Image (cartoon, rainbow, N blue to C red; front, side, top):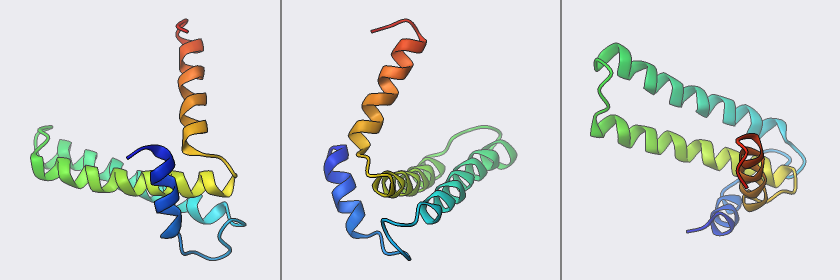
Length: 100
């Protein structure tokens, strides 16, 4: 699956108030999900002596998927594609690090 296909399919599941006129909703969701990722990583340190288990890896995969969904929804709200965002970001990083 590529970003274009993902964004199209994810958009079909985006059922929230004032869709495509409501950047706040997916932005708040994104911060909540990013916090869940951070909390899982914190618990690796606290409960698992810093060792990443397959169970925790699966949980992080799930949470990162939720982060991706909200990023896609934010992109939709801004009339951007995930491809545009990814291409821009890679270009920015290449410039920052002196690569082309």
